[in-house]
Length: 115
Length: 113
Image 1 (cartoon, rainbow over the protein chains, first blue to last red):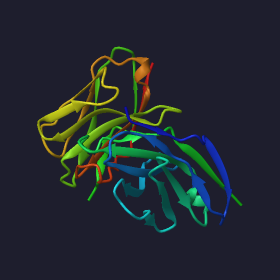
Image 2: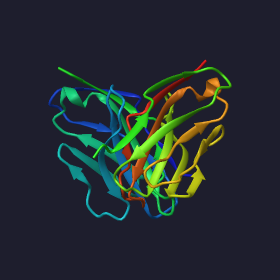
Image 3: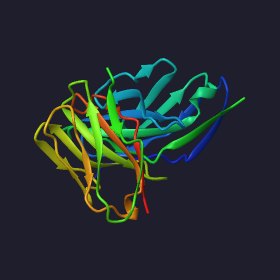
């Protein structure tokens, strides 16, 4: 069975600093997709970034980048130049070939950005 | 585009009552899903659909029914509510395939007393 693990229940970062949120996964499927979603206190789920298992380069979207280490089965999210508005829950999730885009989520990391 | 809409936003039920959570999308997405979010457990898949007339179970389907008569709508039915179904429910849709992001609705907060 596939599994996503986020070992950091909570993280603090100072404004303007970079922060890395950890995500490891377990699968024997060679084809999969990795996603990060942000959930602010208002509750909506916001898509941040996607990495495919066959992508050669790490994905980047503005201040977000995904540090994809396939051999280690990790897909850490890096947020550069943190802003107060980045305070939220962050979820790592993955899909697999043949699973009709069903997402398996980790338990999330709550990030708090401080002044 | 309205994206993915869900109604109601909040609902309180008594044990044993039934209700339907509504979900609609206007992006012509083939894939639609229902997730529940409980504290400390992330989101878990309840049911999903790969197109009109086709549905299947996810990780936690017990106590819930779905149907998909149109591409746009994917209602979730609770036949006999139980306190264990107190949760936040999210509907999502996507173009399908493992590389496409899912678009989430705003969620429905359900309390069963």
